[in-house]
Picture 1 (tube, rainbow, N blue to C red):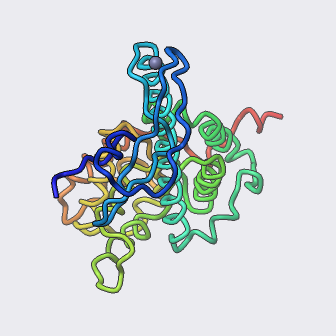
Picture 2 (cartoon, rainbow, N blue to C red):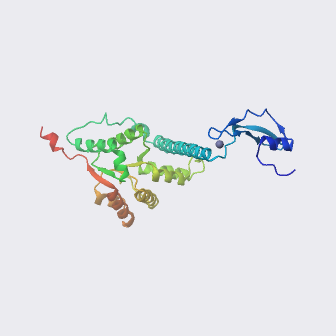
Picture 3 (spheres, rainbow, N blue to C red):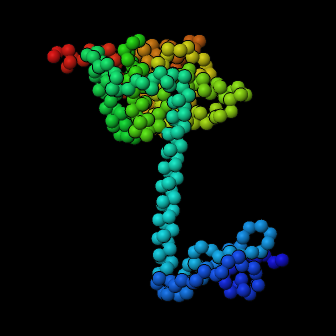
Length: 295
Ligand SMILES: [Zn+2]
């Protein structure tokens, strides 16, 4: 049998003598030139040549109609692309939430909000700064600007960082939060055969593209060459894509370089900290806030 086109006009169908599933719907008229417009026969799948009528009549070929359909198609394409964008944003958020949930510390930190942070004279300034950052996240994110929250143990920096994560996630902004060990632990898990949910690239991509990445307590854990390289590649790709990063640490810049140095080779540690220094403004905890103390 010769090749049959997928759509045929009613007269073509008649001409070929093909079987048609249903009655030909009533033709309509072009709203501009009033030409009679028929439904085309759409060939059904499978080997038998059976035609059904398309739900819509054919498009008129007059000039006004062409302009009309061009506009309709444009609106439809725009709606489709908006829907796709929304879907992608939702997927990114779901992924972030999944990773946040999976973090071993997730459950413990979920209760740490801005509301239950105990503000005192030592931390009031940092608290206000972090809260303002959250309120103006979009503005900071556009500049790729994050912050490094430093202060000694027990000053509440992890609570503040977790509160920021929760606040942003509640606003629908994807955030991944974790210690270096818990974040990189997920990558390590992909090396074991039983772990099949995500592969390494997928996780690295999530860390590199999520709207905000928060690394808690950097420098606390001993790093291996492997983890330092992964960390550097994540930080570097966020740097190149102008995406913010938030760090909490017990240390100042010099000590942090020291803590991230392996076998006296501080090259990667220095480049890493210098990137972070560029991307993050510093916020100190446990510096007395004189405005409050004076009262
Ligand atoms: Zn027409």
